[in-house]
Length: 100
Image (cartoon, rainbow, N blue to C red; front, side, top):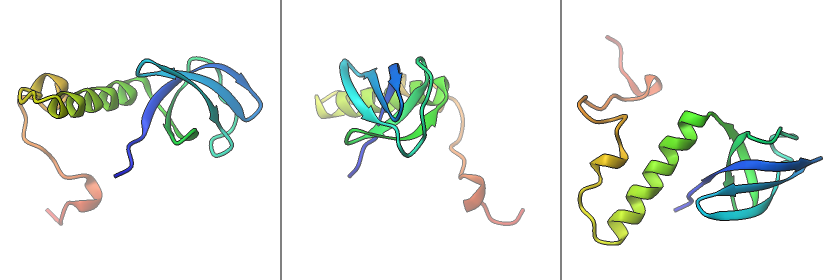
């Protein structure tokens, strides 16, 4: 399984950026997304920025990673990590929905 990590750009120079996220600081290759301004959230995997994220999506991804860490630590009450899903039925993405 591949898990992307949201990180926020702190410093940017050409196609490399210094990013922080989930308690880590790393140099990230930004060739796939181009140079980005400090403060921009990016989804990273193995030292490479795969795409730009909005702040809300970065927060939701971090919440999902927090839930995964909680489950791995034995916690079964993970609902607090998915506030965006609480109190509603799950929906299929538009491309998977059949004709109405």
